[in-house]
Image (cartoon, rainbow, N blue to C red; front, side, top):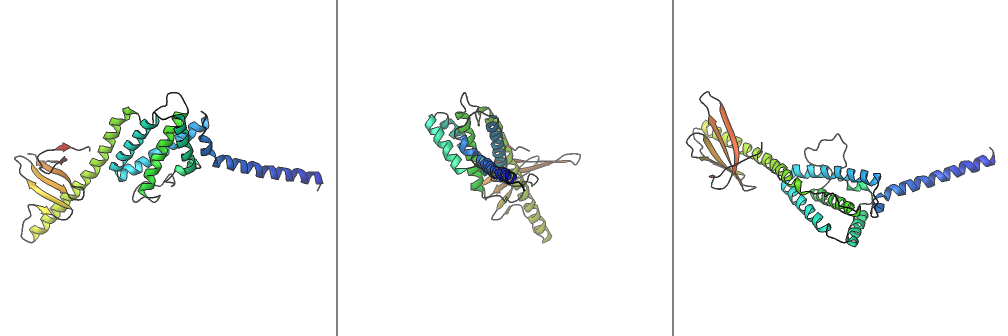
Length: 265
């Protein structure tokens, strides 16, 4: 083979290695370079990616623990108000700290599963605290990045989202609460059937987890329910119509069982 051809081939090979390393270095340094952001299509794309991760984490956390999600949202929103008043040095320092903690954008992804794996059952991607930390860090990064980009930053936690957030969290809590009330009523009816089969009667039922108590009523049949683990109270009531139809409902209450609050269905 011509010696000059070997030289050219070797040069191409070395150049390929160099470019590959530079490309890898550039990819690995994508977060570090963000500490000195400039508005660009790449930064916008990375922000959209983080917003999707923030949404995914919030969905998982909300599903498992709505109260924790409420606390995280409040903490992140308070952090945004604080950072909007901070000077440039504080913004730059916090951004730099995050880029050291998360060298590449993919490090924010604490779920890291295939897109077709459903978010059901026990999570396989990390501890609850790890997901919470990632949610707060993503939120903080988005806040800092928008502040550093200049102008009037679009809020990550706008005030007009507050009503929707409260409704969504209450729906999740009510859904879990209703399921617990239904389970308590099922246990009560089972205990009553067992008692009847042995020739006795059960008017009230209580164990280590629940208490179900018959309440006085003129038209419908009502039961007060105490969920002992969460110390929550609810009422189950049903009414039998003249045509034989039965309508029932579950509501929140207090220890007196005299006050009722509707639940989201």
